Structures are given as C-alpha cells and as structure tokens.
Length: 83
Ligand SMILES: [Zn+2]
Image (cartoon, rainbow, N blue to C red; front, side, top):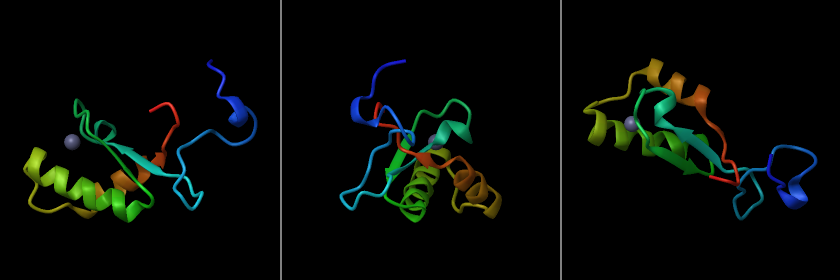
C-alpha cells in the first residue's frame, strides 16, 4: 500500500473536478472483456456519451441497448488518483 498523503484517512482518494466533486471513471473492460479503453468525466452522462461513441467506433454497435447502459452505470466508479 502506497501512502497517498493527505488523503490517507477518510474516503478513498479520487480525482476531483474543479468544483471538488469526484471524477467518474469507467473501464470498458468491465463490460467488454479485453477492451482497455477507459473514460473519465465529471458525471455519468459524460461517461455514457463517451462510451456510446467508443462502442460505435471500436465495437461496431450502432446503438447502445438499455442493458448495456445499465451495465456501464453499474461499473462507473470514482476515478482513482493513481490512474
Ligand atoms: Zn471498449
């Protein structure tokens, strides 16, 4: 375990937006095994729009089914500092 300085105690360290809110992160590999794409945005909608573009260009999906959106939302996490 590395020291994370002032963030050692309390909630998990994460990247924050200028407004001080935790940045969100999503790793496509959580849903599509083998995919190494990751996305960061200040909110879920920002992530979802990036994922939609990525899914279209890299996975050939013309539209994102509701189940996939649900899976993506389920795997969105606070962006870790170390990333
Ligand atoms: Zn992907």
